[in-house]
Image 1 (cartoon, rainbow, N blue to C red):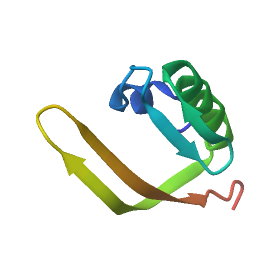
Image 2 (spheres, one colour):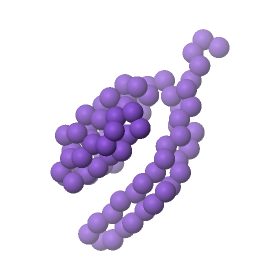
Image 3 (spheres, helix red, strand yellow):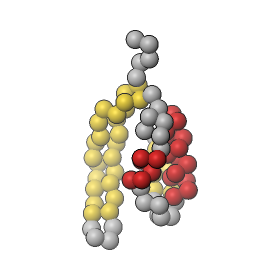
Length: 80
């Protein structure tokens, strides 16, 4: 995210049934809570580097889809 929540927010549904589980922010349900959680996460992770994703589950139909992932981050060491 590098401090910018907007790219991540574009990936999420803006409906009231959207759910986001964030390890530092708990579970957010509904677009307003999910957007606020992403904003907090963006500020917490601005100095991190994404090193990988683990796809846990995925389901896609023409009417419905979801994905559950674990995102792996590495802190950037500043000044070295």
